[in-house]
Image 1 (cartoon, rainbow over the protein chains, first blue to last red):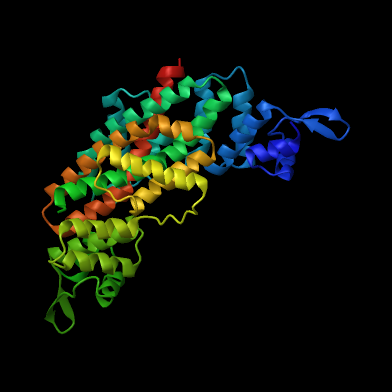
Image 2 (cartoon, rainbow over the protein chains, first blue to last red):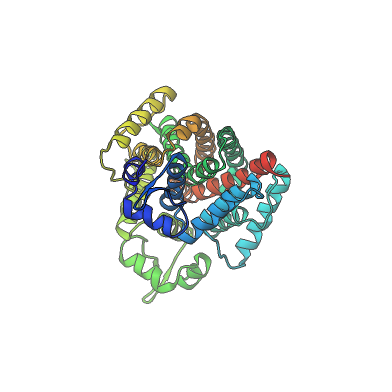
Length: 209
Length: 209
């Protein structure tokens, strides 16, 4: 297909497509005449991946380049490629080591141990949980966190299982990475909205009427 | 206790405590001499609630005033008070009625119907879910959303149940409202971090080693 058709199909403007080619994110089309190039399905998929990393994952062009390099390197196992994508889209937690944070890190380590999760306590996901627990402690909600954390972990495990099952059904690495980015970022907002709706329902049942 | 002790216990500075009294958020202390007032447990609890609404819920002083008015009005049933608190801390979704949003709203209405949730499809929580589903459709992840939404809803229901059980064990309305704000906002970040950790674990099991 021509660049105009590629633009129409993906909703990405022609100048932006040319910019991605210049930046090395998108392979150039096959030249069919001195000033015309032809694009195929692989360009379309790559463009959709770039847009997901950009619009949903909030990655910079340099960050996208790093993820695409991992996707394109046949030496990289899938696990590492998905890790690279998830790593780039995670917010950084730069927490001071105050008493609340030290106690929260110990709780996270105990949770990982108790559940036998294959997660390193230093990974940013574990740091994010510690930051969240520390914030609860600081506003006097430590008791709430302790009361609900196991049920939250059960829920998270159930959700992560179906996420991975969905990703595993996809064959192309590129598509897997796109699913991971979309699932990690948009999946969180979907789960949050569902939890708030379930709160309204549960509250109406307990206190309403 | 004196204002200095109240400040030390809650971590709120003396000028800020005086500002809350002037703004009508915190009742004045009992005068024990012409220029000294005494504060008790109720002031301490109210201050913690104000800080939770401010720091965690991100409410304005006017918004806090509205929530506290609901807390203090004995005519207001608990359900309405919790609703007022949750309503104030929810982000507003101003989505245009594009095709993705129209389709997403229909999916949300069907989900509510299917699960028998006591939630109005016009409530901001339901709009938030529709906005999240529409965003997925726009990046080509509609299939993913369809594949996982029931499991996500199960997880959300489980989490909402323990949240409400915790809130219901608390006796004071004030404490209930504080738990709701903290649980709604910080609970979301805790669940998100746990889900990301469970992803690392599930991915390591499927693709690692």
